[in-house]
Image (cartoon, rainbow over the protein chains, first blue to last red):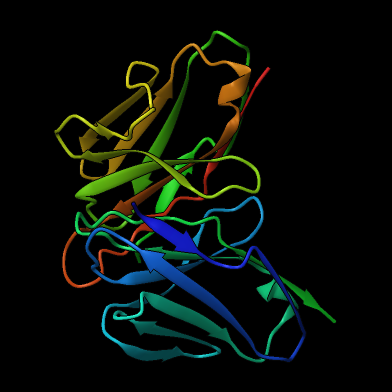
Amino acid sequence: GQNIDQPTEMTATEGAIVQINCTYQTSGFNGLFWYQQHAGEAPTFLSYNVLDGLEEKGRFSSFLSRSKGYSYLLLKELQMKDSASYLCAPLDSNYQLIWGAGTKLIIKP
Amino acid sequence: GAVVSQHPSWVICKSGTSVKIECRSLDFQATTMFWYRQFPKQSLMLMATSNEGSKATYEQGVEKDKFLINHASLTLSTLTVTSAHPEDSSFYICSATQGQGFTYEQYFGPGTRLTVT
């Protein structure tokens, strides 16, 4: 079956760094997305990885290891507005996104 | 670019009535549109995938006669919840993809919160 595993909730301090891990099992693989979703809002795109390695985009970076079925999202210089859920979503062989429940990130002052 | 709109943003209806939700891609042609439902504190659940001019493909467990999807053009898809009941109250989100190039990124609409009383 297809499965996504992320921590349910994480807490971090404003200005710090946090890494949100994701392991996945899918039928085929065509890349992996990270989305941010604030409460009551639709998801917004953060990153896309299809090759192994680290993709950096401002304060956010995303890493992928296809052989390990593993990805992480790294958030630096945390701000209060980063409090949200972070969704790891791999694309399966049918180019369908597989969604997990996401990780709720709480930022404290 | 790549903006998706949804209308209405929220709706309250009485049990037994039907509600139509529109999803539009404003500045691109969407070869594929997706409809999701999300209950509080749960993950996005894909309801159906639709391609312009074709019948929608529904996920297992989603009643096609209850959730009518029409994808009449490359910029518009509609979801009609027929004979709505309180258990249909949820956050409905559409997304669209150009389905081209490298990323197959899905652009999400802002969502529609449906409350059935």
